[in-house]
Image (cartoon, rainbow, N blue to C red; front, side, top):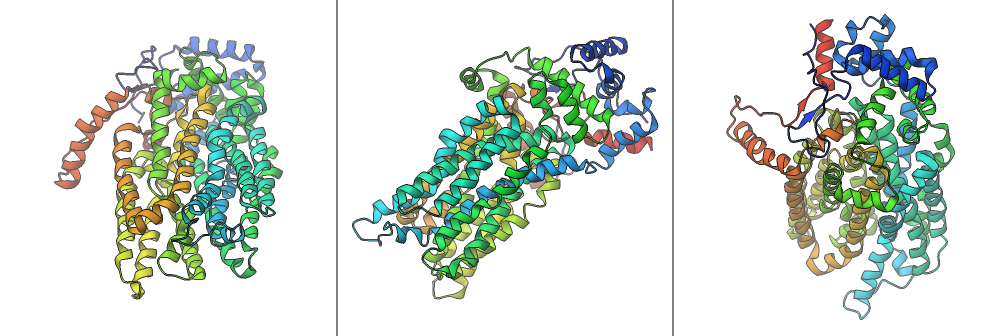
Length: 608
């Protein structure tokens, strides 16, 4: 049984004002002879005549994916490959997995540094004479200085590193930018171990931030551009999984180095260079992003790259022509511009502005949820709860382990339930666990339940964070911008995230001193509720769509999206889950001309 017939109308919706919320295939409705002639011209123009017949077959498949079984030009091996990419979507080439995993290991540098400074906070202030006791004249000054040193990488990332990624990507490509960032992450953390004053340490951590910003702005884009849409979320979120792994290893290193003595903080900070080594050595063994090659007009190299990233030449040819066809549509609204103009277009072109707003929301929500008050200052919080320094480090190690282990479910759920659904489920749960952790400080410190209850709710908080707000922001922001604005858009998103991380890192010691742990945790619990409301109204779903098809998703006006959530989605949710009405139905917001992966899978299953 064939899948539902696609609409034949060829004119697409307005990519700036998609009032019908219609998501369509740009090849749909083109007569067969015209499509084949267009492909032939494309092959001649881009010096791809040696694969013109393959490109034509790929274009026929891309035009109507569920009907590939009826395309006479395909042989049985090609049909089987197309079936397998849906039925067995995780069967991908080694080069694809190697690329994503190798680059995501670089995220461990960021996680390791966060927890390295977490443990170092117990000793480096004493070494540098900025550890005045509460009630002494220099207490306020020293509290701010410790926060300033901890926030240095995030300040440099937000104001320098993130914004360097656009010109670096323009001239050196994704791989060159990642190599540049890995070099900064390598030497700066080693240098930080040899500093002799807090200004020197502050300077080295600023240099680390330059590498962190460029890396965080590029690696998720690189992974997203290389991955097929059906598993893009699961693979791109490995960035967060390896960040969590770096956090875990950093806590482990803190424990191992605890008894070294007064220089323990030097090793705790310096050991973060280790994850940067495989990134420096291996990045040029990975294929360059085919979309970057296409942006530069280098289609022959783009096809060669896709051949390494897809299982068969047919799939590579299909993706090459399909991406090209949507990039052609993009050019109608996105003209060639310089860096400064592209930045301002983030806020002036309606389609791009909606992506800018959505990425801003998911990125700032990661800081609003309060995860980094634990990642940066858990040892300090546990010491304030009455534990010894070793017990505090052990408790922090437990947090790192939970954070890493619970990142694994998102590999599958992020493409099954979707980015938006994961966020809406996890934010309310993070709110109550933080509130409970704060209230646990009211348990008498003489009780064994005091520290146990605090640790329990902190661990539960991490368990809800890791499969939701942990992986979604960087995955989401890497996919929502059009190719022309992807680098500067991701720079904006990551700068937003890391700027507020710097604010949090700078202010939390003072916040903790002023509000106490109960007030500080309660404050962030309230921010979780605020973030939930922002996500509900302002963040569209992106799962199972190609990067180019998301142009149509973000062409839907924000007012249309908000109205739908308020008048359709919210009443449905109340009827279905509060009043338990199993007959409640929800009219979908988007009308898909091109079937999503689940529909294609059903079509293949029926035909078998």
